[in-house]
Amino acid sequence: MKREAAPDSDDEMESPTRKKRNAENPLSKQCPYLDTINRTVLDFDFEKLCSVSLSHLNVYACLVCGKYFQGRGNNTHAYTHSVEQSHHVFLNLSSLRFYCLPDGYEIIDQSLEDITYNVKPQFSVAEIKSLDVKNRLAIAYDGSSYLPGVLGLNNIKANDYCNVIFQALSNVRPIRDYFLAESNYTAELAKRPPGDVMVVLVQRFGELIRKMWNSRKFKAHVSPHEMLQAVVLCSKKKFQFTKQGDAVDLICWFLNAMHESLNGTKQPGSSIIYKTFRGAMNIYSRKLPPVEAVSSSGVRHRSCLCMKFFS
Image (tube, rainbow, N blue to C red; front, side, top):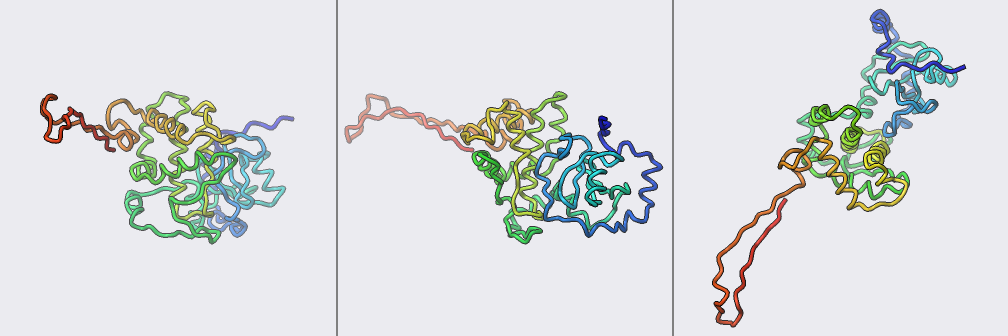
């Protein structure tokens, strides 16, 4: 017997009556299973796919074992997992809402805010401006210390040449400040044609930058898995993380691809990439004596054109 396809979102399928009943449920604010949450196994850097069906629709994270499952209704993978393993607390990775399964009620508790922040870190304008002022070590949940923005990226197989590019760009101040605020580029991505895969490259890079500068992490490292998949997809497998590549070739392609994805043109300042990296050339000339003129040292003067490149 085939399992019925799960809807795109359980939240969308809920009736107003059921939502009201969940909100009025006394267990919503006093869930007895919150102490079973294991933050040491939570890792939200990997692709949001169900570990059973491999579907990216309506995915929930089990906050007890860290695995991803689809759906929360009866006969779904998350529901089955909660019954078989007695794991009860789940997080919808799209809506960032917590649920207790198999009971199905929503959990409302302020103590879970650190989990949603690690799924989707957010920075205010004031926090972005203070990054270069508050340059101090942070302590991860597992007790390890790290410096936000200067932490390790996992080497999945042969992606070290990609990691150095991501780490370097994450510390270029204009690039960092631009991508730390998602609102800076959402309007530009909305202008892209429907189904444009290049949008994923910008989205994943923004997510990676925010995770690298997160000062409230559970672990003192980041896995660039989703970012690497976006690079493989958008470069049409020219750059892969299963074999070594040239970092210079990657950064040349990456900057141009990001510029085009942000609707950049040949006009100066048309994207944050051009504003930061294009630079300018200053050309100036000076008048020299005629070629026939010879200096007292016997050296003939030559005309010259001076050029200086500056970023």
